[in-house]
Image (cartoon, rainbow, N blue to C red):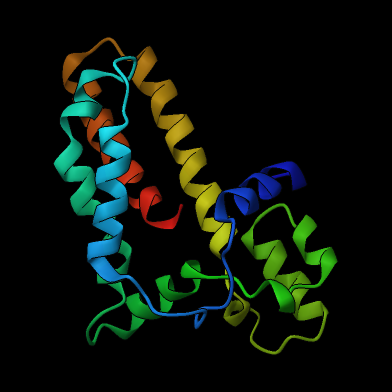
Length: 165
């Protein structure tokens, strides 16, 4: 990932800040945003994707569901993808090509627990890149059965990406 891709993710975030930046809007807020996005899909969007509207709405709050409960490993693995504390990020770390280089840059800057600064821009870019790959595979695939599997992957990843943007 080059700085331009990270800049795109940051632009998509708009106001993203500290994880305690205010009241959380929960599943209802995520679902409301997803319904608005689904309602604005145009006819150029393939039928399978438009038909998955309710599934996309359901999937939007999914990353929050992963952070609930007693499954510590899963909660810890995904919680840092939900935020970024920009005020704590050294300029040099923003040029990192991927999340692991970013974490190394934060550590080199003396930040003791770099993951606690947040990884949100990288989660957005990673899901975006998965979708670009999946849509490319979908366009190339001629086998209807395999195309259906790719469609399922597209819907799932688009629903998750909707949570973060």
